[in-house]
Image 1: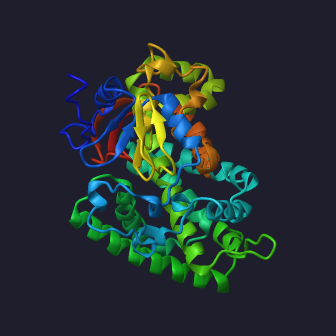
Image 2: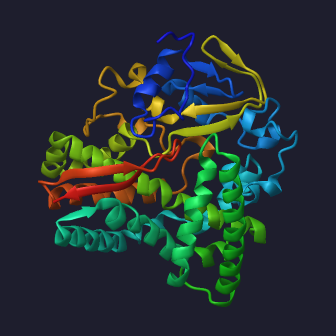
Length: 402
C-alpha cells in the first residue's frame, strides 16, 4: 500500500482480532501521520518513548487544534469529563505531582508485596476450577476475577457492591476508546455519574467504618497538612478501581493465549521458572494491554520531517512501538521470553505518568503465567472472542481444554 494513501483506521473490520498488520503499515507510512479526523499519530518506539517522558500535557484545556470528536465545543470543561477530570490521568504538574504524592502514601510497595499470598490463593482456586471443568473460559475463571477481586479487597469495598461496580466500570472504561459514538458517550456519562455517586457513598461509609485497606488509607493520606478533597478522592478511587483490573484482565488473557499459540515458549517457561519476570515483560510487549496513549503538545513537536503544532492532540501507538523492528530487531514480531530488553516495552508508560500499579500488574502476571503452563502442559485453545475495543483491546472469552 502506498504510504501516500494509507490512513490508519482502527474501525476496519477485523482490526480488533489482529491489529498488528495495521500497525506495521502505520510504521511504514512514516514516523508521524496527521489523521483526517484532526489528530496526529506516531508509531515508532523512539518517538513514543520520548513522548512518554516529555513534559507535554494530558490536560485538554491546552487543545488548540480540536480533533473531530471534540469540534462541537470550543471549550473543554473538566466538570463534564469522566472522573470529573480530576484523576491523575488528566492532570499536569503541579496538580499531578501533588495527587500522585498523596496517593503513593497509600499505594505503597509494601502494601503490594503483602498481597502475594492472597494472589497465590486466588490463582490456585481458579486453576482448580479450570482443572475440574476440563474445558473452561479462562477469562471468566481466572483473568477477570483475580485482578477484580484483588483491587476490590485492596480498597475494602463490600462484596455486595461488586456486581454493580463491575457493570458500571465496564461502561466507563469505554471512555478510553477513540471514535465513541454519541450513544456510547451518553452511556459513559450516565455510568460515570452513577459510579461517582456510588464511590461517594462508599467513602462516606468507610469514614464511619475505617479498616486496614487502601480506601481508608487514601481518606487519611496527608502531606504537610495537605489532603485529598472529596471530589479528588472520589476521582482517584474511580481511577484506581478501573485501572487496577482492566489492564490486568487484558494482559493475563492475551498472555495465556500467546503462550498457548507458542508451545515452544510455554515449554521453556515450564522448564525455566526463573524466566517468569522477563516473560511478563515480553508478553506485555508482544500483545500490549493498552494500545494508545494521548498527549496535547505544549510546544511544537518535531517527529521525523514533521513539526506538530502546539496545542495538537497526539496519539502514541504503544502497540506499534512495541513491535518496531528499528528498535527490537528483525524478530520484533516473534515471541521470545528470553528477550534481554523486553523491559523496554512502552506498555505501562514512563516519566511522571508511569503506571502507579505496575508492580501489582507484574506480580499477578508473574504468578499466573508459569503456574498456568505448569498445571496444564497439554492445554489447547478451543475458541476465543475479542472484546471489540481498539485501545483496551483484549479477549472477551478464551475457552481452553486442559
